[in-house]
Length: 512
Image (cartoon, rainbow, N blue to C red; front, side, top):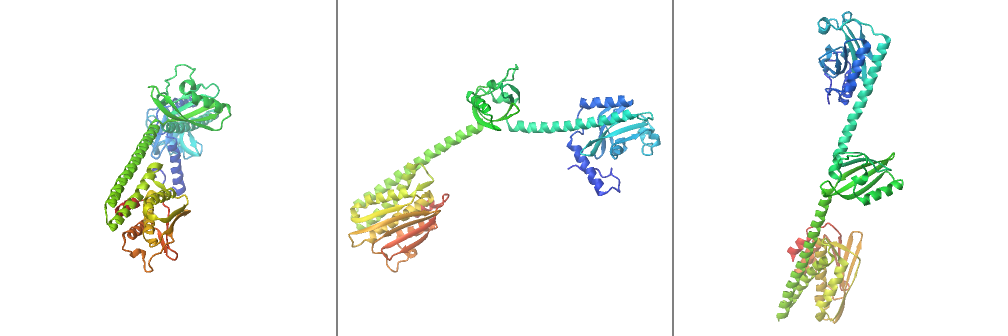
């Protein structure tokens, strides 16, 4: 912030006077008139002032913190003086004006060099130029002979002061409008004003000819039909106009530019007092980026689909090797171990197969997965299951892939354990799977009506691989585990659904 030179103010100036001078200077700088170029509308006013007051010198001066700067002058060559040696410094201390009829009779000025020496100033009259009640400068007349102004001359000089003020304010508003216009032109590529009835273009920015297909108009008959060569957009505009539209119509269109290249343009149209005010932005690069992004996304989708398809196929190959080794072995313990691992690999393969089929690589519809797993289990265990039945009841549950995989592996381990241990020395039995969801809380229950677990069984301390895996997977899910063995075995797993869960899948791979 620019502040005043306090040396100009008397040493005994009050705080209020200092603050008032600071505010005056801020108001002066707001007009952006200091050190500006010549402007003929002010030249005519000083010429008129000199003629009316019958003096050789007239000026429009502005007083900043250190100097008296002259905007317009007639009869002198200098454009600035130190503030304290000019008449206008004293004038702005007055309310409206200051007149010195004879400088030799005024102790404030009689010893000043331009009074004692050339040009020998003897007369001065100045009226203040105000803005928001602050005296920013003066319009003044100066003579080399003592003089008294007539009443009509004073009145004329005052009128000229008011005219300067009006032109100053108009100049300031034009600067503000120019600033706004520059901001608008830098923020949009198209600015058009057109008649709402004839569609005749009245104004538009130079940038329009670069963005649209048109060149500079050479005739008066230049319309939106030529400028916007899009039949559909023009039809929409006519319909919108006939329906007494609201404030704004927004539309996107594709047109040919001056080089016959396609451009995407977003237009915003406002109707006011029979005129269309159209602004627009060239969104070609944005559209090209969107197309590129969509193509990239499609390529990644295809790639992920191919990855899941190949993973599924590779897991199927591994399953086949395990199953082949199982068939070749005569050792029951080896057969059992191979079959158990075969079912684990099959469990993961079903996940990747479902992801591939559904083309959603972030989540698994888990109730559908349970259906697929139960169907596969019935087929794989048909030769050993006898009269063991497996059934399920499942709500619609969507699980993040990094939750779905450990949950699937836990489910497989529980089903396998039930088949292998729950119905020993029995010809029949049942396994039931229940999946429910309430808000974000998911509950998976696997229960059987078998022999149950040993009374001293502790899940966390079990040495078997299956129990170790289930404990690890439950920890990954941050799940609560509850085991009940009163009537068979009931295993309950409770956890929260997290659509953005990360990291579990890689941990599962290491665990397996």
